[in-house]
Image (cartoon, rainbow, N blue to C red; front, top):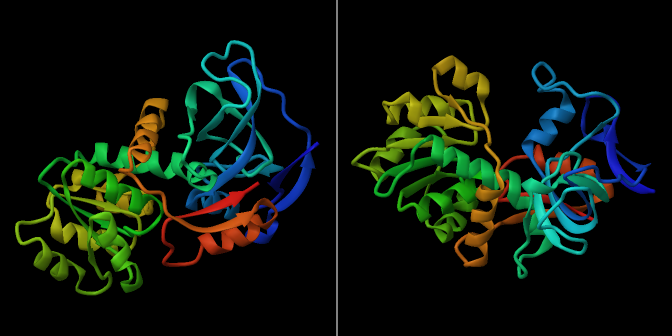
Length: 302
């Protein structure tokens, strides 16, 4: 037997339970991975709470998690390029578990020096950040404003935008300003008067906005960028619909993920881990995720 985090009703983090489950057998095109780490995403907490039940309902008992890393234990029929004992990372439905089935054509090999926690936290947020920059058409010489720039997606988007040659201004609490400077961003305090503070930092204007906060941040963005198609949010789909802005999702692919791992291996991308929790403490990890002012990612370790 194995163990996995399961919930049988929507609710607060305490609905999450660690229970025994059968060890899954890989089917055609799948590999079974002995997990070492799984990233904790805001999407996980919204699914668990029922906030997304209208458009992404779950069938109970439900599993949780969508990214992770570990060691391949078994390989299904038709799999090429992946073998037992390979260290891999990628999208992983139901990632909060000791054993998880991955689609073999969606995973990549872990760079040897990459710690397990960072490998488990890269796939979802990294590919969301990359997708967002593509959708917003961020280019060299442009100025990008990122709301919640120290967060899981935000801190990766800062680095990827700098790789593209963009100037990045990032909103964050004062305690995260030095961290943003270390990533190459110009920090700015959020709250009333944000638009004026950004204008002072970017007198030539802002070309695009990536929002990871929602709410008032979207209203401030409209004061700074005239083209609504160049304002995108990963945090406030309702606000995007109301204001006619982009609601940004993720286009995952092994090519996109491989590009991120290559940047990491070359020392051009950092994955910040805020806190680590053992698998059995998934409820505590969700409570932490639902708090404020996180820096980087939360990870479950196995």
